[in-house]
Image 1 (cartoon, one colour):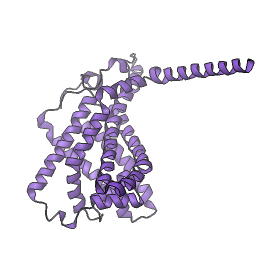
Image 2 (cartoon, one colour):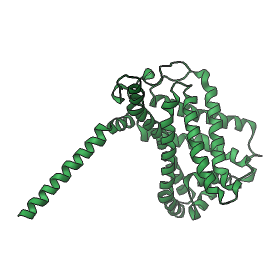
Image 3 (spheres, rainbow, N blue to C red):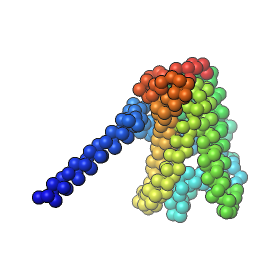
Image 4 (cartoon, rainbow, N blue to C red):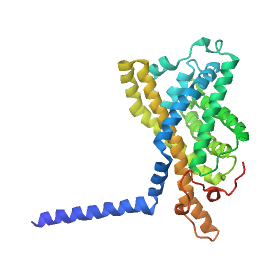
Amino acid sequence: MISGQRATARRGITRRALARATRIVWHDLKVVDLHRSGREFELMGRAMGFAALAMLTIFPLLVVVAAAGTVTHHGLAVWVVYGMGLTGPAAHAVVQVFNAPARVLSTTSAFSLVLLAVFGVTFAGSVQAEFERIWGLAPGRWSTMWRQVVWLAVFVGYIYVSASVAAITHDSPLETALRVMVAVAGGVAFFWWGLRFLLGGRISYLAALPGALATVAFLAGLRVFSALVFEPLIVTNALTYGALGTVLIVQSWLIGVGWVVYGGQLFGRWLHDVWLQAWLESRRGRPGRGRGASPPPGRGGLDAVSGDRSI
């Protein structure tokens, strides 16, 4: 009986400790606010929209750009394999599906290139609109469309450079170091600059930095997840469903990319509003407002971020 009472007491202590830890993480650290922001933003639904739009607009453009490159031999397939961290049979299955024929450039007309560019700008506009919603900013004016064009060009260039490192180094000992350097430094720089550029400088550099760091960290995690989960699924689906099975897994990976890009910005805004903003205001001798004073995504909040309504 005594041992049973002791076991009951231990279970009670464990439950109280778990309840306290949950309260600290969920409420004291304001993780509940981050969860609420993701739910209000409808993160998974918008990630699926990101994946669908990327497959329809960005992939055709990347096929042409990759085919025009001189450092790769399998075009877009090399970029997809690199982004997903695939090796062996899974990489071979992706190459079979996304390997562009050598005549892709000769059969692409000027009108097709214009259409591809327009579709790519549509994708950039969609990303800008979601970033504005996350940060509670008013939609940008149509006259700022040139920002989307520049952002798209830099985005394609970043992907090209990142995926071409292995081909340039020819599997030398420097390959791993260069890939990590380009992926981390280039990724942080692109997402840090890209957010401010698309939003016309309506948020500060300090506010943009946490989202860029979080996005790169999440992308690294997605690459590990892809190598562990998507790689065997590609092999299985390729044997069962053929090329369609491979495309479905790549589409699932794109959903993960959309989740990471938008989720990284949600995390960056939460970190800025809850911690950085309060820290800055405490250093200025004012009490921090914290996340509670900041409206959720898509409901205003211009003054909470920068106070600048102009593009």
